[in-house]
Length: 531
View 1 (cartoon, one colour):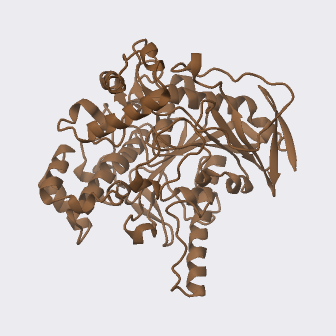
View 2 (view 1 turned 135 degrees about the horizontal axis):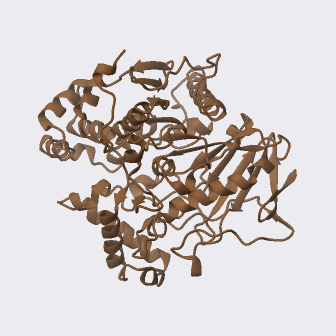
View 3 (view 1 turned 135 degrees about the vertical axis):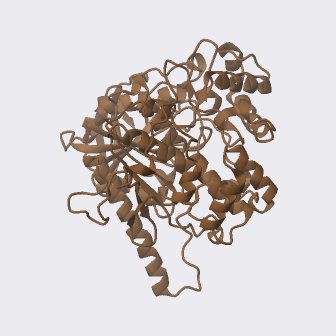
């Protein structure tokens, strides 16, 4: 069954399946190539008649993943120039008078990979549960995040804003409430959302935010943004200007970005690369003073976006995804660990003692993973919550603790492990594989039931938050009461066991980071605020 909905650029036709109608590959901006390359997004060209939106549109040009990771992660399909498109899943196109909550997903992928069309992000199950779900693409790599000499910066974030403006102007026709929009995203998507919370251009485009494994520290100041642009251009054999870069095919810039990542990974002096030290990322949002006025954590520490509801959290073992598949963990010696801990600003002897006490029997590689999980993910999330609490803004924190069975459980509750549960897509990476053949039929059924129950809990919390700003309703539902992060440092742990609220989990590890990874005002909760 096909259903037609009007948009500001023309009418589109979607396909209904069961209770949900999907509209795929809807352009929210013109193709950002040719004369529009390395320029802010422009509106799409209007069309006459009715445009079929039955299949996903092109994804942003990207390199794909290293072979060791490609078997674990979904690859984006069909990269192309007309990549600024989005997808909508709705249970009631045009029939709800614009009253359903809207959830807009911003994908991750280290700002160089990913797409809103990955099967993990299929929004049909969320729509079945009563929301309008939108996923989107944005420019990646050099195309989306270089700082050009004329001041052009953060084009990928401007793409996200253009998509949110499309939602504001059109989502009522799909049954959604433009005044009740929640942006949610993971990793680079969560970092993007934290930036959007502090960007003037994004003001008023969303009411709530859910940030999964990404917070407010990962950005570049102007000098590092300029250095990234200049070095990437040199590796590509071009001048670091718009004219110089647009003279090259996108594939050349993608290859240069990959080469820059390898170069940063091998650098002995990490200072010049800021938050990209280690090479896991190259381009990041740039604090250019205009589109992004301040480093997001600093703006939040001064009270920015305290009127936006926030749910944020991390997985227990984020960094194992980056060590285990690449075989790095076993190569970490005590000397290497000591150097890494010191490089993070920690007292390496004390830090090793604390992390070893919290992880009995852990190898040096395991301890490095735990420290890097805190440095890159958990502590930045806590800093956001602390900054907001200092201004009276509620933030709800979670820890996703279900260990993935992938690679015989070696990944633990790694980066990305929660995504399939949020969307209700239990065939997503890291949720499976299916139970081993030696399991009895009853054991397999129990395992599947446990996965489904966890997904049900998480979807209920995410959707309750999108509706009301609180992840548990008045009656509690499938979760116990979930207090905001405050003096008791409350965190909801979600996993195979029953959900439980913990007060100041991993206290001793957290204390190692006091004075580190702060916002510039230094406002944070102190241990004296317990109570």
